Image 1: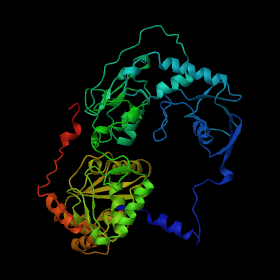
Image 2: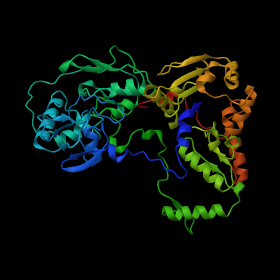
Image 3: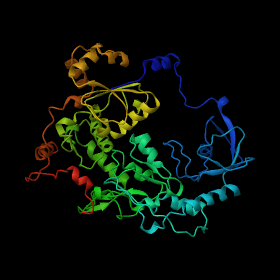
Image 4: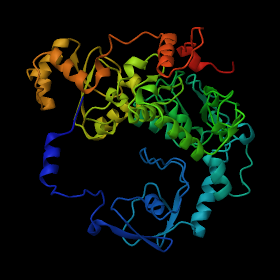
Length: 490
């Protein structure tokens, strides 16, 4: 349950004249002028040198900086020269000042980057031929573009023991450059403090302090956020190169159509263009009545494709959709979007000031939604309350209890939380609330009447609708279990 602040909404409506278009730009009087390699650009106060350079299309090399994380300034790869300044500055952490002329490719900037790259490569092993990050490695690309062709370090490289942090993330910590991206992601986004640094200088290591797993539902994200090959995918290890894609074994390969095909005069399938195929399909659909059209979706179809397919069926006045167990034909309804469309969006949680969780654990049921709740809790002083069994979330919340009577008290306005929410629902009993939910979103109250997984019966009824014959053998698809998602090498 999300609630946008009423005061904010009323103020916005009262100050918005008819036909007013809201803009997100800053008033021109508040902008300051800076120069990037002599090119003028207007930026907001507080803009960093790196952001000002990106605004004119100038890419500054970086390892530790990420636009969704806090600024650490560890790698020093983003050093640039400011005209008339005695030393180079870190572009990711230095806010611009009026009239600055930023020199991104001066001799001093190039020499500073070469020196930083030389230090980073002093202990980095030459593992590129056997590293799974090869081909998408920031260190590999930037060393070729900004580094030198020789090194003055003749000592041996240090070796760091690898850590076992779970079944998904493979660690080769000798390759780590201590950018702390993974640490900041874990603490700021995932909300866990499992990762950190130990030691100083040349002895610094990134790990979990003690031997333990990285227990987070978002742990796989540190694979892509790592700029080098220190953190890679354990199931994907030594499988293919990045340009050959990852996790391709999760899709169907045999007899998969990659180009549209139509039957010619001899009844043979021949390749054709997408325009021709779509025009033929449109012509066939127009020749049938709405109820004569049906659609079958496979088990690997994503939610966006299902919504698009359902919208297409609705356009031709049909609701005959057959998919998997959780979306049977009878339960699909006239409009699949009624199962999730309410008065709030996923991004809307960042504008709400109160969130009420009822019998749920968003950390494991909706990790991305939970990440937005945590973001709003950190930066917007969001209040979170929970009704149901206590769960381990990545933010603090008020546990109101697990009795259904609490919902009735909140709805009637007699519960103290109703004052925090600032709203009283016009219902006296839970049955009235349930009836209203059934009108707005039917699938929210369909927990007790979901049809069984009788695939053969569904397919048989679907075949009768489209006047087709079906084989007599029952269709029993294999059921996936949780262990199937962690099978590697077999």
